[in-house]
Amino acid sequence: MNNIRNFCIIAHIDHGKSTLADRLLDITSAVSEREKQDQLLDDMDLERERGITIKSHAVQMYHEKNGEKYTINLIDTPGHVDFSYEVSRSIAACEGALLIVDAAQGIQAQTISNLYLALEHDLEIIPILNKIDLPSANPEEIGDQIIDLLGCDREEILHCSAKTGHGVQEILNAIIERIPAPEGNPNGPLQALIFDSHFNPFRGIEAIYKVVNGSIKKSQRVKFMSTGKQYDADEIGVNLIKQNPTKEIKTGDVGYIISGIKDAKEVKVGDTITAVENPASSPIEGFEEVKPMVFAGIYPVDTEEFEELRASLEKLQLNDASLTFEAETSVALGFGFRCGFLGMLHMEIIQERLEREFNMTVITTVPNVSYKAYMKSEPEKAIWVQNPTDFPDPTKMDYMEEPFIKAQIITSADFVGPVMNLCIGKRGQLTNQTYLTSNRVELSFDMPLAEIVFDFYDRLKTISKGYASFDYHPIGYRESILVKVDVMLNGDPVDALSALIHKDNAYDIGKKMCVKLKELIPRQQFMIAIQAGIGNKIIARETLSPLRKDVTAKCYGGDISRKRKLLEKQKAGKKRMRQLGNVEIPQSAFLAVLKLND
Picture 1 (cartoon, rainbow, N blue to C red):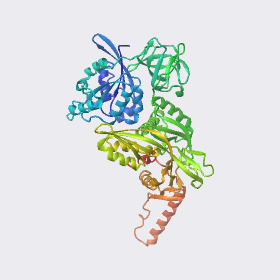
Picture 2: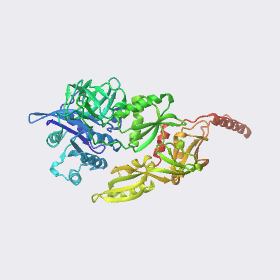
Picture 3: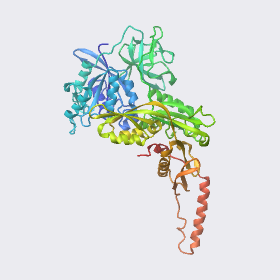
């Protein structure tokens, strides 16, 4: 145990985490020349295309120092705020963290929020200034920022260039010297914390865990404590670049287990594995529940694929524990799921992964939240409105309540004005303003949850140049005046585009929806009327003109009545087409409604 080191790499997006992980793998000879490639741990096509890390990746390396051999478990984490849950899970399995700061860009929002996550778990922090080879690097000034943030000495800050490999050997030595060995009782009952899992179509579910107490042996009978299910440990081992089976995984080490589990519900991230013979009395505590930020409906294009979509979402949830979902129905789209995401990028990635990894073509609806409606006939009983289609008759309704949250935003003093304008524009009420340091402010607002599920998070990041961290917790329901805005194409309502909106914003959003749909729906052979309405009242309209053929081109001269006759004939054809024609709405239109303010 004294020769084991578990650490993760945390930083803001694009500060060089994956590149540094590549260099560490090179120096410890964990990867051969033939297997070497950039961003080696980012093994998903989407990660490589977008240049971002989506999944945390655990890998084991070996390093010799002063004649002693050390086992080093590295977890490379995502930098984007939408995947912060991946980071919190990785931190729970570590004793130390490398905090990487770009020497040209300095400390940014995710640097701070990930650092706070690490400090909550009492991790040893090693600050590193990366990209010092850049001409625009300013190590002195950014070193001062790190000292202000961490309260460390200047000598503790390591300088490196992950691209060239300069200073990486010093980082490896610091990991061994500064990060403590894991604590635990090697002779106690087995307790292993599951912090990640993957689905393998041939071998079932692979759970990745850290052994906190005791040890796990091959073929041992084990029990998952939250479900109470028992399995045989068919294969256990460690994750080198490839899986490496072993006979035993001891206290403090990180490994994987394959026990032929086929049902995704039986493995929960944060669960504790224990032995059946000598079980632990209680599971490991302190694992954080996920908080979805955005809720939207996901429906299969072909309604017969509903069960396939359920299986695909369950497998995705194994790979991404921050995804939550429950079944729901829609009049226009049939059976589907109401899903919770951590942000807009997370929602896009899930949709793309469903299409790529599971060949599922899906429709995503406008995001929303759950409301309570109180009727005049039964004023004590609340009706839950999960979907705009459940909206009761306004004439029979007494009042409605919507969920409110307490939002806490930490940002730089330079951006206090724009952040306040954004929150007040979203019906927020400022409740507190605290200066944490001379340049960092914490703002507290009471806000409707419905206002943050649209595009609030993305806009907050834009106006604060990424330098704002956002957290919230629910504070109950409050009375509100809400209306249902329907979108109609040639008089037919489009169920998936309906939305429950506060009365003050209804006209504005209705108009924007119509304008956006006019841009995105392809022109047809007939005219399309795009309307937004509240009940029977139309509040906005746009007209998409038809594609027209020049039927008068063959008339060269003669009486004007010849041209009129041809135009009237065309007009009658267009009218008949309009009565029979169907308008197909592209998927981009459903997503575009979420970004009305761009």
